[in-house]
Image 1 (tube, rainbow, N blue to C red):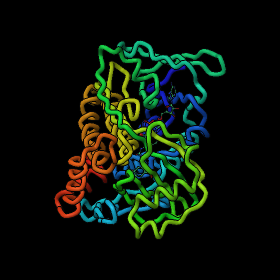
Image 2: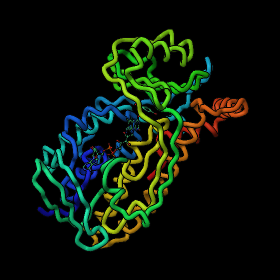
Image 3: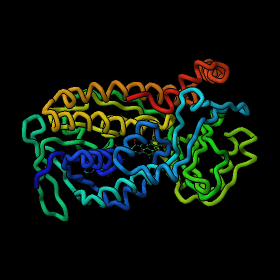
Image 4: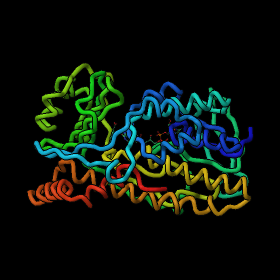
Length: 389
Ligand code: RFL
Ligand code: PHB
């Protein structure tokens, strides 16, 4: 089999790239290790920046997002019983939209299917070959049968644990990593959200976040130990702990109910450089991870797709390699700023095991500065709604 772009991974990066390439007349094949249902069962990000929304529009699949996504003009920050608002729309003219990654991925799968896009599910043993030559190819197996996909380019959209990053020789890449000494325990419940905007809370018992998917579906998180397990938490334990970590006014309004999903995600900052090796390009979680505090994971994946799409279009439409040659440099320039924001916001909001009384005072001072300073609020708003591409 032959295609122009072989895409490893059918998560949001791979599907969005594939759909956008299709819109611009470039052919691709997506290879996904799991099934569609499995990919859609993963509960992840929920906040969409304007850049990602524009890409969804360009991909021709923004109708449901525009109809069902919830516009958020700001978000609440709290410490103790203090609570203040960051006005995203007021400071930047732009809101964020709350629309789950699951829904966005479903829209992308539907669009690929409607266009007869080629997606191979349940692929095993993916191998990327000759990416540093002119004619790369990908080998894989489906139901025990070996297959070969010849292509012009390979897009590595296979997440943090995929094969693409590891296909770049170690001597040719450099990795930067910070592992945080805690995780987030998240639950999804069919209850009305406690507030119409998100609440990010720094409490003496650890961080908490009140988020949502729609008016009857809430997403809540509490900071937890890395060695903790969701089975250690009954729903009642979770609600009790959440109540203790958010301001009293919010705790009083909290509507509780049975959880329909409960999971723990570790927190990590990670970047690999460069994001291109010959004709192999890394996109999204395959190249970088942010702690979820800044809601940047999915959004940084989208900016990679934007730079790669432009590079590939320039190559096919103008026979000019400049865009693909500078892909890594352009993508990384934006990634590092999102890494800084996510790291800084994480440091401001969480309890760290080795935090000294001085460190705690610094956190409070930072939050107080943010509460009282318009310029600091504007900087936060600009980062949160997404820096320009
Ligand atoms: P994904 O979503 O991990 O998709 C990669 C796809 O590649 C497939 N795959 C392979 N396919 C073929 N061959 C192989 N060898 C393969 N290896 C892997 C996988 O099955 C998968 O379908 O990466 P992508 O597309 O780059 O998208 C990135 C986003 O998913 C990610 O940045 C965010 O979801 C991160 N993230 C969150 N971001 C937020 O902004 N807010 C959140 O609340 C949030 N919560 C999360 C998260 C990531 C989590 N992970 C990775 C554990 C919660 C969790 C639990
Ligand atoms: C979510 O709704 O899952 C969510 C929202 C904001 C974040 C992280 C996660 O910063």
